[in-house]
Each structure stands twice: as structure tokens, then as C-alpha cells.
Amino acid sequence: MREHATVEQLLVLANIEGMNAELIHMGLSQSERLMRLNEIAIRQMRVLTSAPALRQLKGD
Image 1 (cartoon, rainbow, N blue to C red):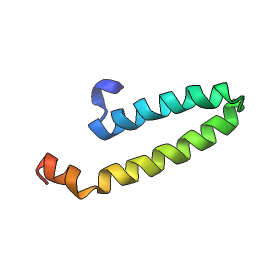
Image 2: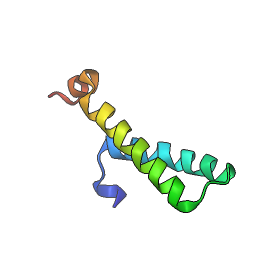
Image 3: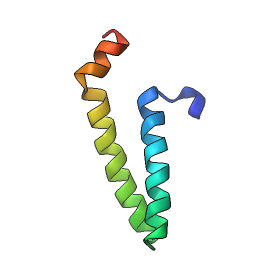
Image 4: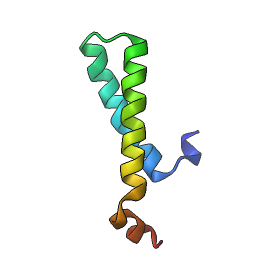
């Protein structure tokens, strides 16, 4: 699936993988981690896909 992911999706994935490790270290349950990571991923995708500088780099 990573072969078909956008740069933004890959960046968010890398970020939440690290965050997941930290949340595990903090002792959060799998369901709590999933909820938090999903919220973070949605927020990061919104920021990345709406960033004017990113659109300029892509040539949009």
C-alpha cells in the first residue's frame, strides 16, 4: 500500500508510527491509541493538504 501513498500520507504515517511507540510506552490501551492516532492523522493531513507552500511545490 505504501507504493500508492502520497507524500503527505507517508509523512503522516511516519509521524504516527513514532507517536504510537510513545503512547505504548505511556501504557495506553490499543483502543485509546487508535482514537488518538486517528485524530492526529486527520489533523496532520488537513494541515499538509491545505498548506499553500506545499501546493506551490507541487505546482498547483
